[in-house]
Length: 606
Image: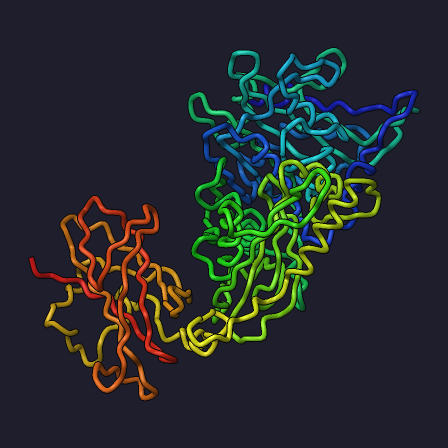
């Protein structure tokens, strides 16, 4: 194996007589983004994965931080060293001090297919993904309504490597058969050696006609296994990009210290949620299933569909496909429809989610519009006017239409984090200007109807501010029960502590049904082996903390709603067979301006 590792050698690109692009220029195409480099990395990598998604497949998108040591470190040394003579990449010094690598892996994608050489034209209908990612820069992607443009964003992979070195391992279908490909690449600084000028670009592979070519098939598999890279299941395609000597960046704010692996992993999980949520929710073609690990430990990626912070954006996004629920900027000449806009008001979080807050693109309750193109990847969040009612937030989404998508693509910088009108002309300038002005004009809180018979969430702020009284799961697994161990009404027996308990897994949210405020909470049930009856038992809590079922108007349980199938079951009890789904919403109508507490009682009677 060591012989195979050392067979791969570096090839350095000389400056051509007619001129060449120095690698510093490619790395600096990104400029100085306002986004954190790890956010830019996640966005660029996810965009590539989504553009390569296989039809009808979810995409597994995994980010992992690892420290090299022992045999693993030695194998990487054998593969990467010696570095190109005169290149000053700093690989040897990095290996001597011990380094961390970051791997970004996708599965459920096509992999990097097409020719291995940049001078070989692809066959009709064949995408030259390998060449465009590994070799070329500035060539437009040929993905219809994809997220990328000219491939300058790939520079971020090299920028977050202290050595500017990556290793690419991909498996694809190439002209009728499965092929694995592995190659190293570097974008260092331009230099001169032995009276020859070099661009600073290097590739690590096997020598073929004077250039470094990718290792393929068995050779690629053996090297990948020795380096500890993720494996492929039988017949599986996809790509892993490894960043060598990863720069994890600094903590923001007053604590401007270097991130630890755990802090970096938490930031990655948070920024994935904020930037990729439209591709993470159901139903979504090519849905992203994201995971983050650091040195063997997992960090959960927040679920956008269960997050209070992201809820208004998720709900607004879904309105874009419902006739009558969205707005369209008025335009008389083609493209007549340039995009769709929807806005939703919801309860603001009483307490921010600690993990989501790590990479939050704004502070405080949402009052923003998430802008995106047809690829359903976040461009940015545009701020609007703050909501006048405490405890209420609003989120909007604007998505470009298929007909106008290219105009918005042309307005994006290499980091895809803005729609810039400078440099645009004609129709493109008019389309992007119209979209930006339309968003600004509509980014204000909804005006509440002050009529007697109509309620709105904006008018329910006092209730929203008290919703912390609808408590989440108690330590024993369900909501808080009655005082002094007394039983609930109807004499039903509570289950013993030995049985798994239902859990309130999602903080309560306020909604309006038929003009009345309703509180909805997410509940998860254990996989009980027998049919089990559960009662939702809400009660009013007064200032002394005592619950009473007399003297005060009582809350009413309206229904249970299955989160996966949409099935509706009315009443306060729900009977669950072993085959029934386990994730449900419970809807409760509260008394006016009251705090309620919810218990989940399991009936033991058989």
